[in-house]
Length: 169
Ligand code: PNS
Image (cartoon, rainbow, N blue to C red; front, side, top):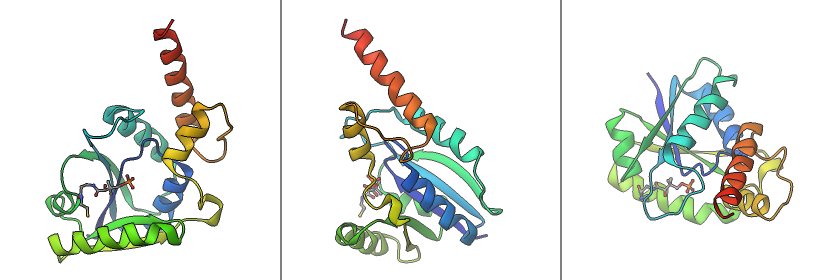
């Protein structure tokens, strides 16, 4: 059984993440999309909201026989991967600027868990500039993000904005 984890903040999931999931899925029997519960950050979506959205979105995806599971975790990615019996950590690389950070993480994770290999997937160039942070920023300032995030995520972002406007009235 080839099991991988795809860890990230996913605040929110973007089409770039989906592209990586689609590319990685044929290589594994099971992939756990692992949402980091990071108390230091001030996320737009709660862990449950993120997990719920991703579950709905991947249910409609082609995944070439790979079982896709969504889970959340706290603490070390390498430790979570080991606890799940995963042999690979999937990460996406958009541009050279991602490389240094990803290399440091991959080497640290290898130091922590030498049996677990980090595997990088090159996201489609169409998404090379797409990040969760940029999507939130553009959306909150009224810019268009259609085609860059799943429609469900956009609808939930819109609802968040409405809730925020409602609570500040
Ligand atoms: O989507 P992101 O924010 O780029 O994902 C980063 C993530 C969650 C993969 C990274 O921050 C992480 O692994 N955090 C967990 C803590 C950890 O294991 N740190 C050491 C990694 S070298």
